[in-house]
Each structure stands twice: as C-alpha cells, then as structure tokens.
Length: 89
Ligand SMILES: [Zn+2]
Image 1 (cartoon, rainbow, N blue to C red):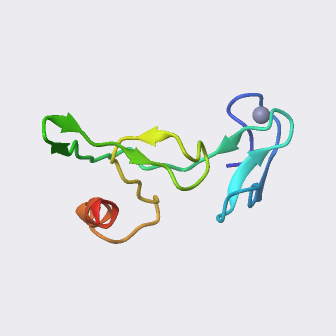
Image 2 (cartoon, protein in one colour):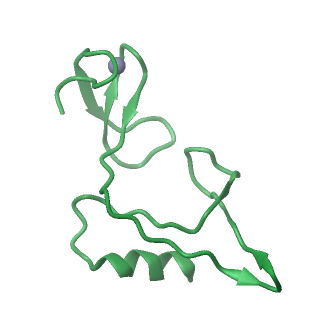
C-alpha cells in the first residue's frame, strides 16, 4: 500500500503506538490500515442459556466486550480453524 484509501496521502509502514506489528499508517488523517483476510470464522458459546463474550486484552478497544471470532494474518500459513482453536482455549 502506497496511498491512503481515505484521503489519498502517502502512507508509512511503522508500528503504531500500542501495537506490536508494522502497519500502513496515514499521517495526514491518522488512519491505521489493517490487512485483514476476508474469510472469518467464529463461535457463539452458550452456557446456561447465556451467550458468553470475550473481553479484549489488547488494543484497539482494550477492555471492551467482543465476540469470539479470531483473526488470522493474510500471511498466515496455518489452517483457518487453527486460529479458532487457538482463540477458545
Ligand atoms: Zn489518510
């Protein structure tokens, strides 16, 4: 990625504050562009007729409730279900 899809300015590859991986960051509009794969899997665990949610331990939105839908990097080489099993442990 060379240019920001939001504003057209040049982007910089760097590790944003609170993150651990390099991302394409637009200095003009402060947008952090994440390269996310399109395929998503998830589960909705139920316990005693209640739906269980996860509490995010990392940014963005640390401490907020989240569904249990793990991410995979576009460069990941492991099978897709491995991300799901990793997440529900
Ligand atoms: Zn921008």
